[in-house]
Amino acid sequence: MPACRRTEEATVPDADRIEELRTAERQLQAAQLACKSDDLRMHGTGEQKITRVEEEDLSVLVARDTGITCFLGTLEGTLSGTQFTARIRYTRTWIHDISGWRLLAVHVSDAG
Image (cartoon, rainbow, N blue to C red; front, side):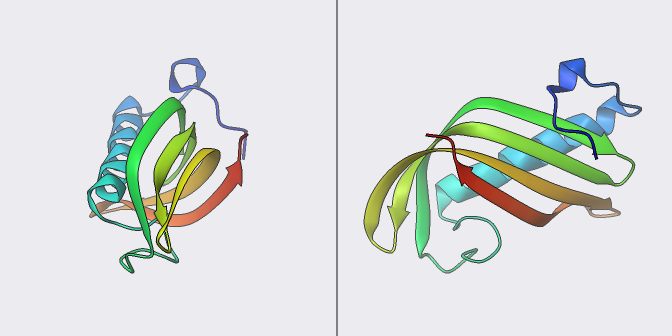
């Protein structure tokens, strides 16, 4: 699958799907700010709490029923009771079905 590119630069057959996926990504970010833990493993455990998301870039790629979001930015919060601030890059893979976009897999790395 091609590398993530900014939506405005990508050639995509369905602009509505891109906006739906961008909305799903931002809703997940908002849920993390509210009280959810990060992505799959810690979701709902309270082990990680995100208090700030500062987005530098969010790229979206959609191919039929699969979507990829690539985020670059800074997160602040607590992990197992310890405060952190981290500039990260993550890639999330999504699938689309009758209920909308659902998160399938995540990769996160330090962006220094």
